Image (cartoon, rainbow, N blue to C red; front, side):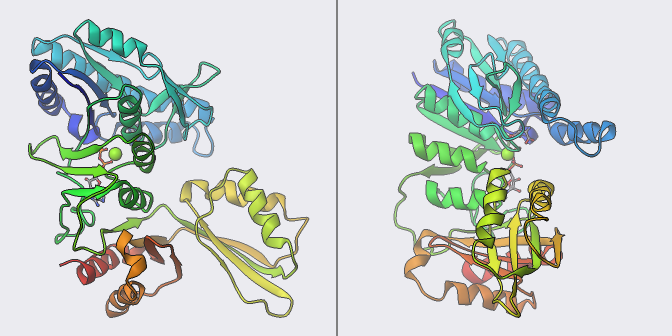
Length: 402
Ligand code: ADP
Ligand code: ASP
Ligand code: MG
């Protein structure tokens, strides 16, 4: 007998037929005598629809607390429907909201971090031979208010339960049959991987491959939770995510695209010591995460500083800069969201020269202009025009992976 954690994404439970499909997958494991804990996301596009409803009421800035109250409702629907489907198949099930399942988080509404999962209630239900269905993406903060974990957060809920209960298996079911070298819906030649390391998966997820949420991978690595990414519609082995994988011929593990990028430029800044510190210190204090930074060579006593943030944080970043306006001298501040970040990822590339050149060659052959570049030992990212991003991913993918 094993303790199995299974997570089903929104598309896997999008309608009644899919809910029953998931119920059957779950009861197969239960029938074999296993303890089964299931994490579910909101059905289909429910979360997007709820966000649209909030915008109808307040297009600018609905309070973050109320947003979380609203968004958590999506998962409340799917857990109860799934529990009903399992009951209908003749098996005992109980649905639990995040707080009932013991999820405590910090107070950062919309991007809350899980502090602890007190799994006592889940344990009790399992001991009573029930299948436990938990609402993903949500928890409770110290004020007893509902929080959400950020888009795609149900993956993290599943890993957190698997880690805290030391589950034997953690399976992430989705609408593709594993992790590919690029989004298989956009890149026809993408190849499915049998396994991938936490580090490479973390990079891919952080750089835009939404198949796993990056925090879930971070947590899986930290607690040594082996993950399997697989399809809820096509029963076959998926991709295993773990610490070490067998030697691979492939240098590049994948190509990812991130459209959630804004570039902010401060032009004609006074070229004096301490100015970068002032700007980035202020951004950090405003909890804005800065990604790529570029500073121009100084000219006539001035310089330009350009950096990127996620599009969601653009307005927080601009507000932070505005608060500095009387303490620094500059010509203008501009922001631009018509860009995308495209990246290649692979742990092997630090010891192989020429990866960057090959990537740039692919873009040059495709006639795509590079606006900014950033590298680390495991990835190379370029910023390009958003309208060319899909073409860029295919061009780069086909250059590296055959
Ligand atoms: P879920 O609702 O199950 O959480 P998501 O939509 O969040 O599913 O993630 C699955 C999607 O991720 C796939 O449909 C696929 O289009 C996309 N995706 C992006 N990059 C990759 C990749 N490298 N491998 C597999 N899927 C990817
Ligand atoms: N329903 C949430 C979202 O759409 C959480 C998730 O799907 O993981 O982002
Ligand atoms: Mg997801």
